[in-house]
Image (tube, rainbow, N blue to C red; front, side, top):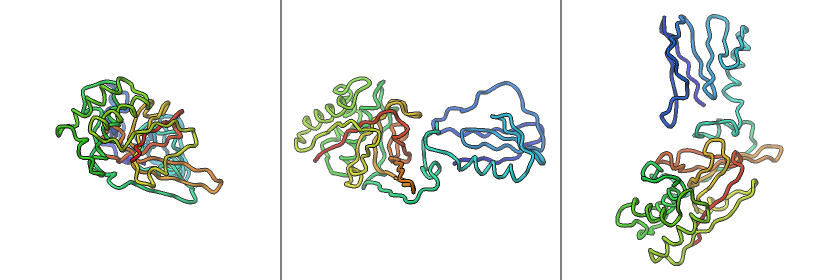
Length: 277
């Protein structure tokens, strides 16, 4: 959870911005903000608060708070009372979104911390499926010693082949079929890619427990929309009422490290592709 507290330079407001993808989350205008002796607070989804002396002004909701105890309670609650269906930015730490759980299970597969490819590494469109397939191959090359998967010392060549097999905006069946064709072309006949449709309550935790990474395809996700990622670990939160929430550690094809998480419950549909050896 990111919260910024900073003082105003007399005469002008300093605006701090945070964005994982480099884009600005604010609508810019040519108007100067001229306040003095004020403090600005950015909470949750870039909600802004202005405080001066004994009040806080909630810019987003147009509400003023005058009681200091209420102000403190409000700011603290803004930091903690969140749920995983809300974020519109990548999840770095699921603990920021789940509170009051009774137990936590966590697991990462061996070699999860490799460097991975991103969609920006390849000149194509509608290619997140092919990118995730290359990342799966990259994992098996680096962590399982399938050295023939590295085509001519160039993952670009592997991507071009996979993309030509899978096609534009590939389905899980296209991706699994492309991986199998690639395995066959490299004389790996004892391993295969399998595609599966997952129900809303299904998990692939068993694969992670057995050190098997998998490609997760989500649809209708509030951040990733329709996208393919490579899952390399999980964190499962269990609550006293029996509810469970799972987050997968992923290489999302947007950044080169598996330092983000996805909650599949935030998607309308989920599918998976995994390797059988």
